[in-house]
Image (tube, rainbow, N blue to C red; front, side, top):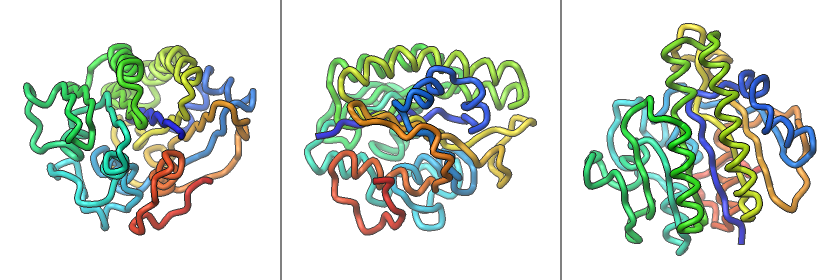
Length: 269
């Protein structure tokens, strides 16, 4: 049985990841990982893309059309499907994920830390501030992996998004944060590989030079997907462009979950 970790680096552009993330680049060069370019769905905003990545559906179908839509998901999604199949789920993530898959609206006290087998995200550690340090977020994710050995773990750092929206994507702050995040990932990914996890590293959207996203340009729409499968050779840089809609069915396939009929895009496998 495969266990999966999805690292969803908020606001990580494709070109910035390729230029600055040397450890992940090393895994690609060594054929320990496969690299794809992902064409993100629209609008290139966070909450709609969180739902797209977890349901495999475009915005006009799942209905989370903007960041202002605060409600639980109404569609089959990875957390719901894994929970229904008796698998263990966990997330170290921004509180919008709690609102999508556990409870809405978010209660800053009761919903910050949850360990509840009845919830789709059974073990959740949620933060509410965009500037929450990535190093602390990755430590939470490492703790969840060690303590609960979840079958599906979402790891959602906000550092790239915060740096990009604060200083713009052409800034040293944004570029250097990609390098720092790669350093944090090197430690985490190495341990997760040793634990037998399949790891996907991707993003919801990118950032433009003005520190904005939401539109249709490649800067805000093209994001990476690094796919790492321990014990299985990677394909290196595939030079392939895939749809963001393929991520959810791919994760379902890896988790040995039945892919719901709502997910129309093909799995990568």
